[in-house]
Image (tube, rainbow, N blue to C red; front, side, top):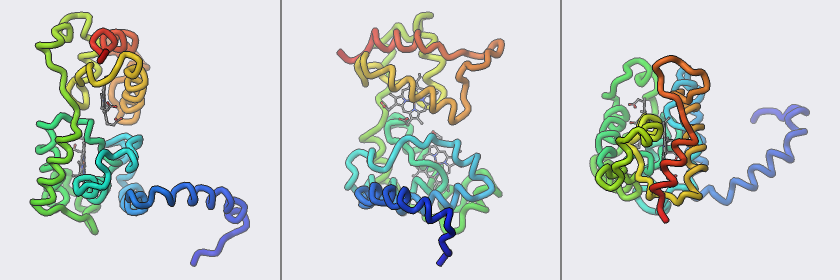
Length: 226
Ligand code: HEC
Ligand code: HEC
């Protein structure tokens, strides 16, 4: 048992309040996720692993959260980086991503020494669990933009959106959200870009695409869900 030093004791009420707030969501795997996170976050590669996926998608936000798929996502997909959102990728992309991750969990992935150092204690899904995961991710996946329905995407007025929004996933279908909802999503994506160190346009570099938020929001509003 670690001895509580006075300075820590002074923080005890805040800590207890925090714990009380957390217990309500324990059923959804926060404690297991914290344990998994501790493993990778404290490794020498922690800062690099932390940047792979942004931290904003919380266990309580997982759709169908009592399903087998949601359970597997919480068990396997937090062992090396933050929790992935099924809506990040379109359904067609998930099988390949999951296969790449499963290889790693079985100790056969790329990134050699880094992953070898991390592998102690990493759990790998069975083939059946992998199929359940892929089906689950596909059900809640991103809907890609259909260029036939939204031809403006390949015109100059669609360029700001096209360049910025296909760096990490397919171009999303603008009908996913209403015009009122999009600006908050775009603002979150700007934070995701900062987190993952993609182009955000804060320091103009000649020849690099800049993030033109106003143009992006205007494009999305023109094609948003009514
Ligand atoms: C053994 C460690 C490990 C586990 C466990 C793991 N990942 Fe990853 N993941 C990585 C590494 C390393 C990268 C960065 C390199 C890459 O993209 O392959 C990554 C990147 C990603 C990315 C971002 C890259 C992209 O293609 O969009 C997604 C999404 C992702 N993982 C999803 C998952 C899912 C879903 C699971 C659970 C089935 C999972 N990961 C489990 C190590 C892991
Ligand atoms: C740096 C990588 C990155 C870039 C660039 C990016 N996204 Fe994302 N996107 C993510 C990640 C990670 C998620 C899943 C986590 C989340 O929802 O924040 C996601 C999820 C989404 C989703 C599904 C979630 C939802 O709330 O509907 C939409 C839609 C989306 N992105 C739209 C966009 C748009 C529009 C742009 C361009 C402004 C963009 N993304 C650029 C990383 C990125």
